[in-house]
Image 1: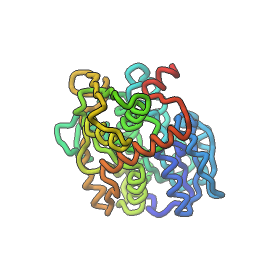
Image 2: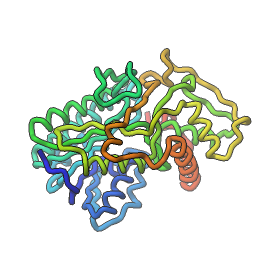
Image 3: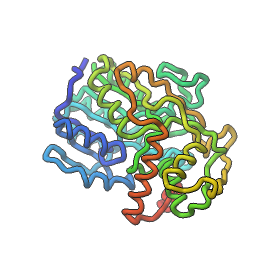
Length: 342
């Protein structure tokens, strides 16, 4: 089994993105030499421009390109695979994209690792792999996993591919099932979209679903801290899986309360309109209405989030507002951006 120690050279796929750029900052602060591979398809990928270091190399490329992956992986000790297509709702009309980026892309990462001899991997999975579990909070050992969207199914497939390769080749790999990760540089998700809507019209807020969908929300810095700690102290195993989230959940209605408060608005003056989704309570087909993660395995390693879910949402809302106003970019929700690009 590959030795667990601080890696001097690390490849981060998707390293220019929301979680990736923050992870790269943390790695550089530790003295790590980092290579970013990113296709810059995420609208928030301009974050990479602020990352400067003599120990940082940026390569624009796509995880669907095996030759590029093999070239940038040479000489690396650790791979952090964050590159993914994260627009879950798009999977209803374009599941092929989820398959190509999230399944084939992960397969290519593993094949490049095999070819060049890298034996350590951290993988961004998702709490959506549980589907609608009968047991909540849900521990990593829960099964069977019955995902409810192509995105979630692709993340589950990624875990399975990693498990098979790691067992065969003696690798040490970690998969992290994230809750809803929030922060000012996120370019999608509930908090981002609520800020967009309230900036356009502070008197009216449309919410997808009945408002009772409940999920964990966690600050991006706490996600990065969890990943780095687990890489340092998790016992060696072909694949170790960890839920990453705060205790408990926030409903969509409660997140709306927190965003309205964070933006300095009076909730009594904001009309809320619920646009009901499919039967079962999700905001759209494929939206898992309940994700509640048991994080005791990760906490057993000594990790604890520094921010509560409510703090993470408030901070993300204020930061998102300030970033959007500073940039002067068009105020488009995730769905509106998707429609404009179609």
